[in-house]
Length: 63
Image 1 (spheres, helix red, strand yellow):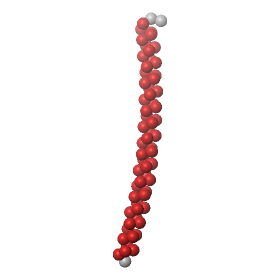
Image 2 (image 1 turned 180 degrees about the vertical axis):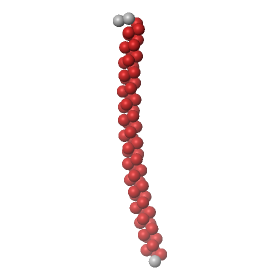
Image 3 (image 1 turned 30 degrees about the vertical axis):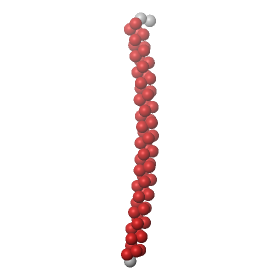
Image 4 (image 1 turned 90 degrees about the vertical axis):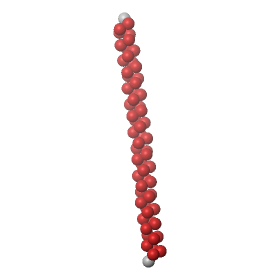
C-alpha cells in the first residue's frame, strides 16, 4: 500500500467515525428535544388547569 492509498484509507475511516458521531449527536438532540417538548406540554396543560381553577374560584367568590 502506498502513501496515497494509506492516507485515503485513514481519511475514509476518520470520515466514517465522524459521521457516526454526528448521527449519535442528532439522536441525542432529538431525544432531548422530545423530552423538553413533553415537559412543555405537561406544564402548559397544568397551567391551563390551574388557570381554569383560579377562574372558577374567582367566580365562586364573586357571585
